[in-house]
Each structure stands twice: as structure tokens, then as C-alpha cells.
Amino acid sequence: MATSLIIFLVICLLLACTFEFVNGFHDTANAVATVIYTNSMKPTTAVVYSGILNFVGVMTGGIGVAMGIVNLLPMEVLLDNNVHHGIAMIMALLLSSIIWNLGTWWFGLPASSSHTLIGSILGIGLAFYFLPGAVGGSAVNWDKAKETGWALLISPFAGFALAVVAMFIFKRFLKNDSFYKEPIPGKKPPIWIRLLLWATCGMVSFFHGQNDGQKGVGLVMMILIAIMPAYFSIDKSINLQSINANVVIIEKIISATDTSGFGKEEFKNYYNIKNHAQHFAEATSGKAFVDAVVTTDRFELRKDIVKVTKGAEKLLKSENVAISKADAASLKKEIDRAKKLVEFAPSWVIIMISICLGLGTMIGWKRIVKTIGEKIGKQHMSYAQGASAEIVAAIGIGVATAYKAPVSTTHMLSSGIMGSMVAKKGLKNLQRGTITNILLAWVLTLPVTIILSGALFLLFRAIL
Image (cartoon, rainbow, N blue to C red; front, side):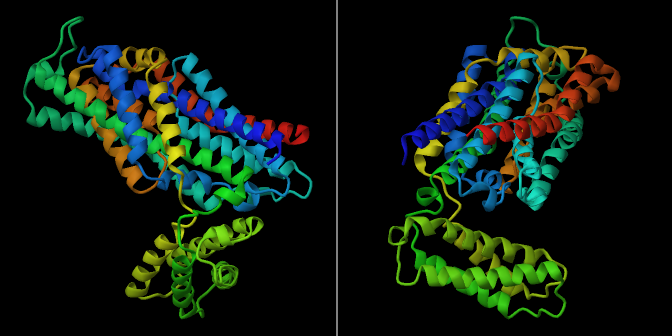
């Protein structure tokens, strides 16, 4: 690889690590604000505790969310004949994400790192409209963007509503008045309250690592696939013939499906599956592992698997496709098995992101902690409010991770704090100025990052 490409690769990896580091101290406040502002844990202890659990979360979180990030941009965009175009794309989306995250952190606003990243990726795709021979809207995987958008949109409303419910449940079953009072400055709460808040802080930190850490892993994989597709397009440890067996079964089930009710989109996916299944079989004939495949052909194998699995998933979801329950179950199983060839991340990538997120968690937390702890409600956060918000956030993030959906930790917890305040004294218990600023930051995140990343992409593409 040319020296210039090595330099750009290092720069892009450093930017990805910086994004995850900033994500760490930007989002740490979501986990530690409650234990700090209720005197349940000393600040230094809290951030180290949170940092360790963020690290463990990334290490154990899998890569489902990471692949969702990678798949937001179609392969035709991710891999360009001119590798410098891929570098321009990666640098633009990373810089725009970092700039917005640092800006909102500086003003103490708990904005969403997830929205920031998604907006930056969409900005890259939309920027293709302004290029000669542009692919326009096809440069964005709109199906995946819609899925991601719904997950991010629902999270603040879910956080708010569920925190209100949690507060009412606490009041119904927990009659200890001290649980609902404001903490006395400098005085630790009873041990049972501390244990509860330590547990909720730990859960939010752990699940934040599992969900947000995967976004960093996804970014690094985008970098590696764009710059070094021959080495990172497919998993070298997977037996190609076992994957070919999965592809054959997928193609067989789809071929036996009644096509009389198919529309244009269904036929497109139908023939994509057949054509790419055939190409994969021919390209891997007599080859057990990736090392036997010419380096320039490896990305095409990735393309085959993505087209086959995504096409089959779309057909499964279509109302025009009639398929038995047994065939549907078998198809889902074979799709998951085939995806193993392309949905992977080397151990060093996961470890690197884990360290960056864990270290970032341990610094820079004070600005946003102050907003969450003091400025959302007109009164100091009570033990019950802190526990309600964090239980809701932990459950929400955990469920989203299980379904491989990126979700905003910031939105879940900040809206949870708002809900807990409203549950106590109604809307009048919220500080209007702070809520307005937070909501404004949430609303502006997508359009600002879309414009910023798109502009940077066009600039870098012209330069590189």
C-alpha cells in the first residue's frame, strides 16, 4: 500500500478513536449524573466505575449495531475506484460528528451522538447529488436509514413516558419518604438507595458501551473496507463452502416461491438473489478460504452475500410474497449464517474502541452532568427520579441493542429525567429555558450534521 494511503488510514483511524473518546465524555453524564447528584458515589469513583463498565459493554456487545452503521451507505458508495474518494467520505463524516459533539458538550447540552453520526452519514450520501454523474438518493440506504431513524425518534418519547410510569410504580410500592426527598448536600443516602443507584448507573454504562461502542466499531470497519477492501471485506476465518451451502439453500427456497403476485421491487430482489448466488458459487468454486481468492475479487464476494441476504430479507417482509412458515424460518436461519462472512470485526478493532470509550468516559463529564443534575428540573434530583430515569434508559438501550438498532442514550436518559420531574409536580417542574435549548439541539443535530458532513465531503473530494 502506498505511503500516502497508510498516512490517510492512520489519520482516519485516529479520527474514529477521537469520535469514540469524545462520545465517552459527552455521554458519560447520562450514567453518572444521578449517582453524583444524589451523593451516592464520589465523582472520581463514578466516572472510573462507568468507564470500566463501558469498556466491558463494548467487549461483550457483539457487532449487530456496528453493521447497521456500515450498511447505511450502499457498497457502491463505500468502495470507489478512486480510494481517495472513500477517504474524503470517512474524514468528512468523522470531522462533522466530532465538531458537533464537541460544540454541544461545550455548551453543556446533552445532544445525541447517535443522531450526530447518522446525520453525518446521510450528509455524505446526499452530497452525491452534487457530483458529476451522481447517483443521488441511491447513495443512501434509505431502508436502513428509516429503521435507524424510527429507533432514534422513538427513544426520547419512550424515555419520557416510561420514566413517568416508573415513578408511579415506585410511589405505589415503595412508601419510604426518604426515597422521594432531595439529597442533603454532603450526606450519603441510606445504603439500600446507594446500592440501587450504583446498579442503575452500572446498567446504563454497560448498555451504553454495548450500543454506542458498536457505532465506533462500525466506523472503523467502514474505514477499513473503504481503504483496504481486499483485506477487510470478508472474514478470512470463515469457510467459503459453508457459506456457499447457505446461499444455495436461500436461492432454492426463493426459486420455489410463487412469483405470480410479485411487483417490480420483488422481481428486482428475486433476480438479484439468483444472479449473485450464481456468481458467488462460481467465484468460490474449489476455494475453501478467502486467501485462495484474488484480492481484487474479494469485495465482489461481499457484494454477493449482501445482495443475497438483503434481497431475501426484503422478500420475507413483502406482502406480495407467499411463503410457508417452515420455509420462512429456514430462510431466516440461512440468512443469519451467510451474513457471518461479511458481518464481523477483528478483535483489535473492538479492543481499540473499548479503550477509547472507556478512557473518554473518565474525563470531561462535568458540563453535561451539571445540566442533567441541576438545570432540567426546578428542584434538585431526588433518589427516585434518578433511579427511574436510569432504569428506563438501561432497559431501552438494552432492548435496542438486542434488536441491533442504534439508540440515543442521551435522549433516553435526558427525557427520562424530564419525565420523572413531570411525574412529581407536572410540567411546571421543568426549567423552560434549559428544555428549550436541549430540544433545539436535538432538532438541529440532523440538519446541521447533514449539511456540515456533505460540505466537507465535497471539499475533501475536490482536494484529494
